[in-house]
Amino acid sequence: MALKRMTKADHPQSLGAFKPVGHVVVAMPDDRSAAAAVQALLQQGFEREDILEYSAAEENDEMDRMLQHASDFAGFGYEITLMRRYKALAAEGASWLIVFAPEDEQAGRVAETARAHGALMAEKYHRLVIEDLI
Image 1: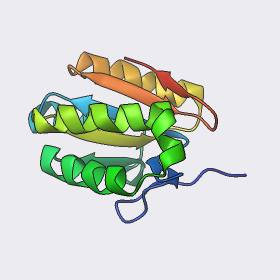
Image 2: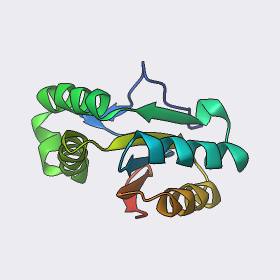
Image 3: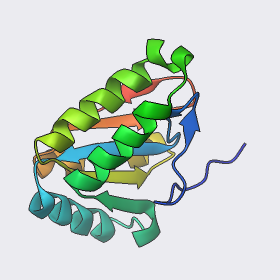
Image 4: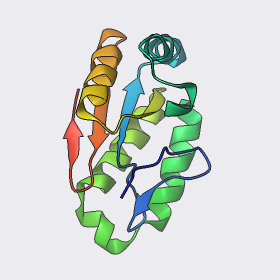
């Protein structure tokens, strides 16, 4: 099954938990560092449609909505733990990038770039596991 890029209108979920398989979710300290990371990723060959940007308020609202509708079964998984962490970081003002990077080499470049621009965390979503990159 081919992976598809996430859009702001389509948030992939499993049992109501956020699950963007083939993407790297990155928390940046602020909008300025997020914008710098986006420019660096574009210079490395990522396409504009590969990168979604979220403000702290957008991410906080989205995680609130998803957490309210998550299945009881999802509550036992790491996805819910991460959603709560995302919400806490958003409440502290973190900006967010969600980058379509289905190949390990691409995910590695995202993590390297994010780290160079002060990322707070980066998570690669695989089909069965979530990999901590930062």
